[in-house]
Image (tube, rainbow, N blue to C red):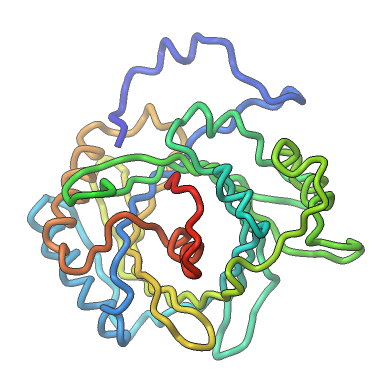
Length: 304
């Protein structure tokens, strides 16, 4: 987790630009994640059992936690579909492509959404990748620093930088939305890894994921660093195999250099302490995406 620092030298440096002259995207989100054992979640009560742990750690580390109650906030349901080539060419090159849609009372609501992301441990590498799609209509860029535990032990912290774009899925008029040529036209960033091929993308491991997500409340680390938090479980549609759970909180900011060093220290202390307090819940060495890619026993390269 990065500390707030003086950005005067950085501000004086030449601005970095994409090929069309657009300035590099900057990090505007801080998101912390803990992957949890999926089998711990058997009911809505399980989500609020974890919220009690969050509350204890927040109190101990001087963080204000304003919880929601089970009676006022219902779980949200989404279907998540990961798309890749048969040899996982996107994932092996730090890309993730997925489609998701929300459900209410058993029925889909709104338009499906495409999420395209480039995730890398080096911030500059992530920033330099232009994720903007070539589509009519609007899209939303989200560049995040993701805070994760160490892969092999509790109590540590590491970062990944996730450069994302989101937009509604509207394939009307597209001859073959699964063709490499189509993906390259929409996402020029994929040209180096898909160019010159006739590959098609398909559902990763033929698995549709059902996400059940419960908002838990809001964490206030002080000095304006405020983060809604939630816990979720991912399971496969059909056989209801509980893959993994996740606890996450996310704060948005205008400039990273303006974040309070004290608030960042408090957030890191909370994150480290929560790992120890919730150690019986935590699954190390994976992510939600990684759990889906490893379902059929032929693991891709692990860059997460």
